[in-house]
Image (tube, one colour):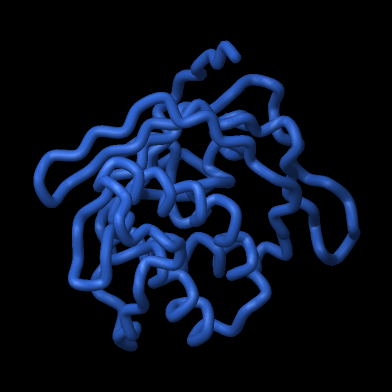
Length: 186
């Protein structure tokens, strides 16, 4: 379960490492009701105009990995607007709740996930990115004690991000981290 928790660092809003894992430290991943405050959509943050759909999808995913941890330092209102650059519901609400849950537990994500995207599939207005993400340079730290409560494992996490095309560009609506590791060969 520890590696599952760290695999879910990318998917903080993902309520569990597998679809129906109520025993997970992140709870259930059942779709949540829509958030009451509507986020103002912003254009896809990376300069993707002129790129193929496949390249746009991959760029959005990679941009999200780099920037989403900043949301833990924002107010709830700022967080929703910020995350809407990459996410739409139900993923947006799940990430918001996941980040808030970590904050409430006085835990803070630190470090950097090392993405190794191995598959990008685009079919009309839907897309899937599969990543063999390195987690060894990540951790959760207790903000009260300063102690690290979870170290990122050396094995890689298989992350799946599902996206859809919106009026504002591609957005992630669902992420999952199946309970299995993956191997990356450079």
